[in-house]
Image 1: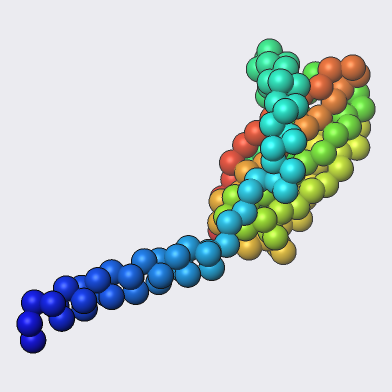
Image 2 (image 1 turned 90 degrees about the vertical axis):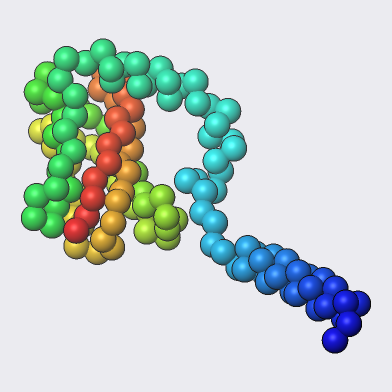
Length: 144
């Protein structure tokens, strides 16, 4: 085999490698945090205000797992007040595993059943309102 054929095989091998990488790259699943991620980015300033409001609280909401329940316990100062908003439990690696639930709590607690959740890390984003103040609480949990 002469050097011309070797160069040809080397070049064809490189082209085959690049084509394989392109095909594999296009077959990978890519999930954004939300389908309207860029539109939400424009409203990020309001989320910063909500996070500052939450940061000013003496007692923060607690998020924890107990048995097959995700429990969210709001501060005792809001126990007798009406708490509204929503809870988003999302898995960054799989948009199909996301779960949203409305909050309408008067006792200061929210329970979410987790037996249908797949194992792995989840981010819990609680967007809540008491009286006229809005709050945003984020937490990370791991479902075994």
